[in-house]
Image (cartoon, rainbow, N blue to C red; front, top):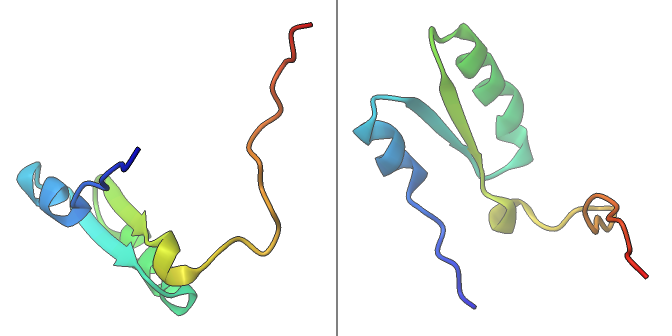
Length: 67
């Protein structure tokens, strides 16, 4: 199944929500400062394919196994 990621910049603009996209880990600090300095809600989009995979494999939260 191919899931399409929404255009968060366009979505944010449509509801007048401030938005920034992080495509490099070097940007995180600056974007967080910008978001915290803004008044009201702020959407930070993290572009994981651009940043890369997690250094540690993450399988998600534990789930209950029913026997």
